[in-house]
Amino acid sequence: MLTTFLSDVKDFRRLQGQRYHLHYTLLFSFLAICCNANTYRQISLFIHIHFDKLSSYFGLHWKAAPHHTTIRNHITGVCSEELEASFRAFTQHLLPANAFVTENYNHIAADGKTLCGSSDASAGKRAVQSFSFFNVAYQLILGQIEIAEKTNEIPVFQQLLDVLQIPNTLFTADAMHLQKKPFK
Image 1 (tube, one colour):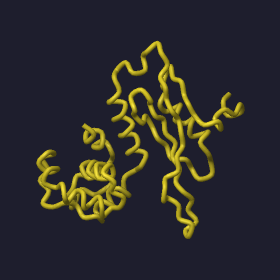
Image 2 (cartoon, one colour):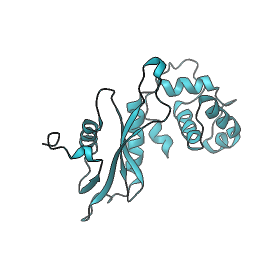
Image 3 (spheres, helix red, strand yellow):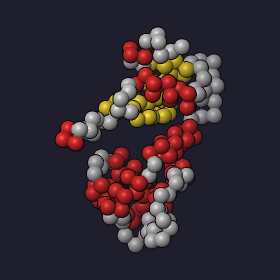
Image 4 (cartoon, rainbow, N blue to C red):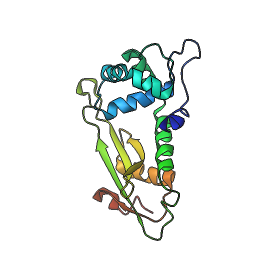
């Protein structure tokens, strides 16, 4: 089912010479990361080990598993906003139709996290930070946005509120979001 949402991600490659479907490569990479793969080589090894099962289950006619450089090119070439939108649509699809149409309040936990190992002091690159909304009742991440370098969680929280438009919701967030000025 996730493949139908990943197939909406625009393929950035030319049609000539495409051996591997982008949405399957992204799906298999996601499965590998869920199984603790941390590098492109480990993702490639995961696909190689499970190649026969994946090929038969998804009806693929690939001759071999994609090389780690192919996986790297696929992952780095995809627009992150489109990928996030496809995952957001997928989680909305997993929610029941009446998930937000209740008399009770929905509980959404809002929090920002720093990605471990994403900083590079030698290149002057600070760690990557992301902000997400987590539906506590259904245990799903409803949306996630990267926090830009020269900002903090407050404008990203407001941006995600505008994008998701979740009614009847009780949010839990850090104390920094209780400032009077940002909320008008």
